[in-house]
Image 1: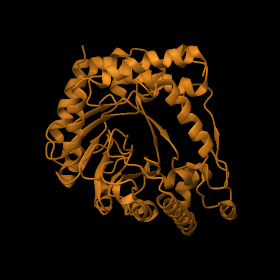
Image 2: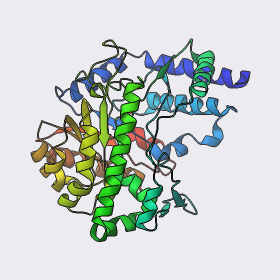
Image 3: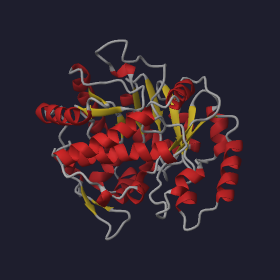
Image 4: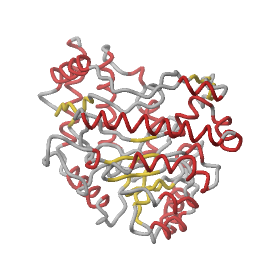
Length: 401
């Protein structure tokens, strides 16, 4: 990094450190810990601008030149914006995490997925690379690969720049989320997958079993190599919410972390339009094999699980269940009760629409939470792909001054 990059990062790091020292962050961590340990009261709120970040903080406005410096610059700017404007329950942390290893998705199976990009800002579509059953033979199970020199170099560079201001930590893998049907679709395409369920069910089972076995072997290697780190902290848990909990061991317990000491998660939203029985047959039976090794689990994403909860509840150590905007809130609350966390995701279109109607949103939230009154809820605003270039929607929405 050049001196200009370092000076920029240090100036931002001081602001983040100041925000992180606010005592309210301790209260927020306690709020999440009590909540995820099933002792909570008021539902915690997590607001994630996600796709709207580029409108709030345009990449073109970044000042750093070095690629690693730009990544950290953007991270620190996001924390500062959150501290100043988003009045949710996410604490501001003074830790910068450098990970030795991240669990791979579709890029480790010997085939490169292909997509047709959108001509503008919008959805891409699949370009299947598996055209016939025999093409699946091209798949290869993943092996554990590390670039320790690159990781150490990145750690040293960031530590030299801001290590005396922020806590720069070298960690192992902290995100364990499994997306088996997503991977299937990356290679085969969404429409082909849906017809395969009917016309080629044995082929689907063979592939899902192969993917499951591949991840099982990879998890064995990760655990054996000591590459697991605790995620019962500010780590984002894929189903929704943050990882703070005292239901799992913390850093003070030991140096070698096992899968039984961390959060796991899975989802198969590509099966949103199939029956509960088919979801169980082609996804959950395999996902449960992977999740049974984890101390706590979450399940679900953006698909409606209302009528599938009887199968979802069979997941070992299940703690969180994703409740999408179009789920039947009353039914989900009755089925899950206070035994599981309902990770409710309000409809982001009400924030992202051409008009922003605060009164309507307040009524929507009030009525929705009334429907959830028999459940145990957390509120996670996600999939906010635009704010119509009005960042104030995020903090007006939650009453920030």
